[in-house]
Length: 138
Image 1 (cartoon, rainbow, N blue to C red):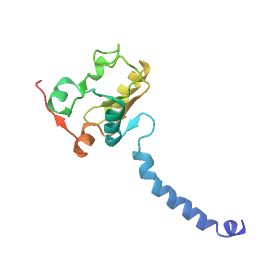
Image 2 (cartoon, helix red, strand yellow):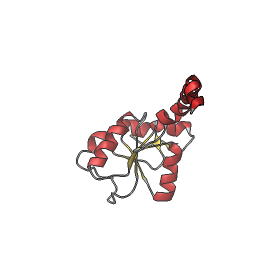
Image 3 (tube, rainbow, N blue to C red):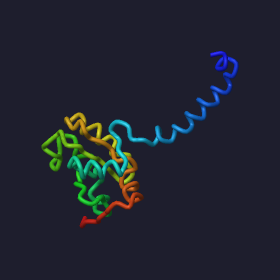
């Protein structure tokens, strides 16, 4: 205990460096309601998660994740067509950048989809992870 009191500056330096090492993983990390692209693929493969793209139809037609269902953000209000009937299934939400997806997850949770999560980084992160993307007719 004397050592800690006499060398408080060393303890402070150790705590600061530890905090700085953890900061990137905490600020970027998943957390509740947020999943990385790798976690999204795992949920799709293991738990039959449903991937929903809340982009507008023109954005969705330009590019979207393979097998993602398009339900525009504005259509989520009253429980849009295309949402899974089983509300216990994980629902993964994405948009081009991930900005709208967070608000969409909040709406989905109000509708009873407790396992709704944002795919961090949206379609941009999906592409960066070299996951399949497709285009469709507008």
